Length: 416
Image (cartoon, rainbow, N blue to C red; front, side):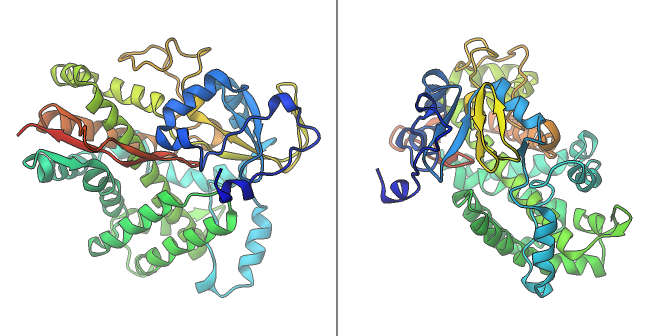
């Protein structure tokens, strides 16, 4: 056990029965960091459906599809508000504008305010809007794959997956292409430092906001045909858009747009590289790629959101206390035997694939239409432009744990 893990381990509260204590640290668990989905399946099979772990300050873990779905819908008990929005705004009001940290809205607030702040973005991320971006997304995917095709190998996360969503984000938001490397480094830093510590998260968000700030202010004064300019034109509850809210919108969209595609794409490509028969099937029947995309999202869900108990509650006959944290461990819910037949198997055309990869309830992922499109287009591009690709036997994949798990490296090889 590492010193960090020991420091984060606390004594069990009196109301937690011994039978519900299970040792699992999502940051340092060896098997989880070795292969997150193998470990998630093990937890789904062998751990209590809801358990309390003493690590990372102590918290609940929800593993089943039903429990997580119910908790997502019951925002009055299982809240996304890690702090009171009014208290945060009051604290920021005392600081000079240039020192304010953007509030993580709408991701860390509950209805009804959540809906009011989220509503202006519906049109921007509608299926129609996403479809209108397909040509540009496909051109980018083809350029990235063309750049590695002739060499017969690549480290997919570095060469493709890290670049792909950043460039799409730059195009959507009208951000300067000359800052691409800076944005990519910000994205990498975020993906490797996600933490339940609010202070660390706020500092990370401020770092992103500081890089975006100049362009955001410039678009306020000189609007163009991009999302930042569109956001400046909106009113929230009859009030004109403010700089601090603009920073919040842009930071959250930056983060959300990267996490889903970088991790989802990496896990999906790893599976394709290990299943050459599936590659053959999808090359012969490309119309099945959307189905494959959904099944890959289900099987390799990677997000485990944290909720805060807003009041003392008895949930599934388990006593929980106000202020306690509950992790919605979607990777385990995705292999719930009560929901999915042969849940650890990849099944093309699986019926009733109502997965939770994009969440559920008020906080269902706003960018899910765009993420699905990005994933589908990249799979189509790789299967069209590359011959059979495989995992490099000399360099097996590596992974990271955390609240959002993901591949660190995926080395691919193919014949040229």
